[in-house]
Length: 116
Image (cartoon, rainbow, N blue to C red; front, side, top):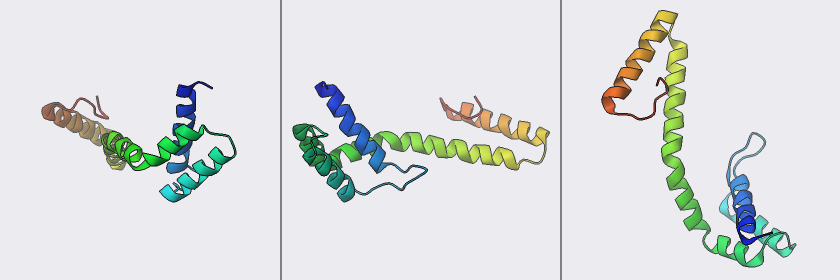
């Protein structure tokens, strides 16, 4: 594998282990590092790149979290707006609510809205 492919392999493993999935909870830092170290020892991961990822684990995860926070906030807002729409008793109420949300987003200068 090329160096970029080896980096992506390590990043993919970290992503899979640190993320919640339908079949598992997110693993903590110590467990992720232990798994990476074991995979490195088994010759499955590039030793130098794995050591670099482990050494910079907190920095990598902090940067990733900072990039994900705005997207997660948007996702949660979309979920809330959708649930509010589902609770509206009639089609006319749903339409009225959607139009209100659309007007509010336009007034706020929002570039992304569930109702655009």
